[in-house]
Image (tube, rainbow, N blue to C red; front, side, top):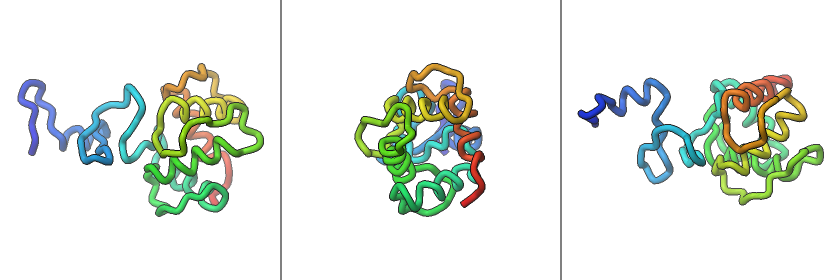
Length: 145
């Protein structure tokens, strides 16, 4: 087991606590202060909520991955296509369709959540507790597909 002796943290402890993600390169990424380049970014959703998101992006927005409740790169590419092309989107996504959950993706999602899910925070591209709560409402607002 990898152990950081200075602060007593282990990879196993971080994984159990939900603080460790593994980037596509295989490097461990702790925390999400900047753009989240981790393989899975559920933004506060449980696996059932993430499966609901994957199902509604499946048919219209080109999601081709497994319905596994893990919002990875392909899930977020489909979300970016939805945020870019949905006619009612108040602030369309203008970044690359790359599956990276960065500030542009979060800001566009926040604009949608503000209009439709009661998000009251700033459109700042930072996925704080208010963004996560509104994303939860979004995931569970429609019947399961």
